[in-house]
Length: 219
Image 1: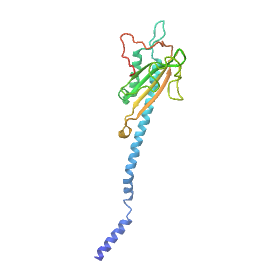
Image 2: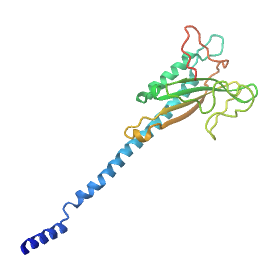
Image 3: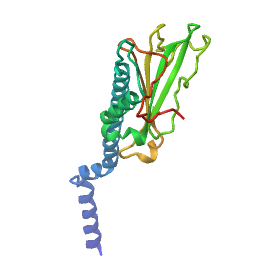
Image 4: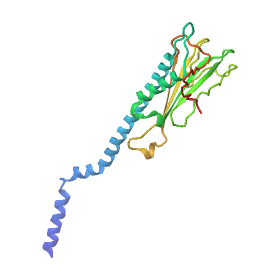
């Protein structure tokens, strides 16, 4: 019995002095934290990339809409419903795998000056299945009076000049998480952009000559 106690005491002493598995045990404790940080970094990087891509889509859509027109013999160029549909289609192609048609909403507004000198959303078109409305007004807002002094985020509002128009774009995208779907469900990215129309344009409205194109009216 004394020998058994001595052997057990020696075993405990050896185990107490053994440090060969310390690093492995420490790694086992820290591995979940490191994995969470790695996965979180991947998700954060993807979120930043999506912000950049949505912003680029908004700028390109505003730029293309500012150039879109149909030349008219002995008249001022017009914008047609088919032109609006084409710039929406170009935006979808640029967005690629984001699938803005299913996961987002493109909102294109023509900001003009009304007869009273105020800002006016003359017409507005939307595309995409996500249920979002413009944050800055609907078609027809500001037709009279001077209640609307500018359109856009506070401190960065745009104002059109008499006889011209600004193509104002809002792109809203329902973020599709890579890994944290339970925590990022419902997160969305919203970007705006604006461009003056590049040339003279008939500002009486959007034309839709035969064969008529689909009208992407906002709900």
